[in-house]
Length: 345
Image 1 (cartoon, rainbow, N blue to C red):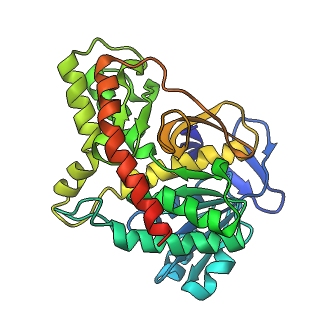
Image 2 (tube, one colour; image 1 turned 90 degrees about the horizontal axis):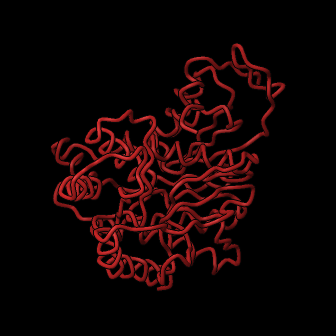
């Protein structure tokens, strides 16, 4: 799943006329045309995410949208010799053009977190942005898969669901909170501690996408490693505090933009593969769920032609993970309710 992006850099050439992908040493294979829209494409996450989506061989049309500076980003990215055609759109009057015909819409729009700023501080600004963008999605591409990156994801996904419900376009199988960065971090930190190759590591991360609502299931990590309980607790805390670690390391001059762009590209790639009928595409995501009593919850999800094909259960949890699950529920519940309230006010 991760390798297609890397391969596209190293060994892929594309024919936009025949829509065929030619790999050196491999047979030629065709892929469907797919349009991806990035809303917030000129921002700190949006620019590297746009670059990574331009490198993805599954994308035939890439629409980049923001309230300013998008034409420059689009011009820059468009010079890369890969399959997709790129167009930049700026301002509300061009949002319709950006969205129409989209198969996947990725939303990194919003302001970044700064030192001392909690995810709640981001809420009023980003919630308003998300609400407006989702109203446009419901009008212009109601069948698209929506990948929500804008924080706080625990609230912005419920906001989006309420907007779509009000418009009569809500499909629970097509709305995703992108929690892939939590998985990326958990894999990286686990591999470092367990002294195993990171490319072989898999760690499910469930719950939500903020602080203690992030629950990595290291008891289910593969390959298995003989880590102590204290090491597992430390890895869990580091995964939960990964965003703060980056904000502090950047000394107030940025947040986790590059790693988030990578994670967003990985999840969008999974969505595209699911749409194209690739079997057994599984990623963790924050979706409408009955895995717990909460209306939204992140867990492993099987992706397919309709978006969510199956929401997978939590599996066996350690005592530490069971305790973490119960601790996260009240905070996640409050964030979900906050989003629903905002959308309906």
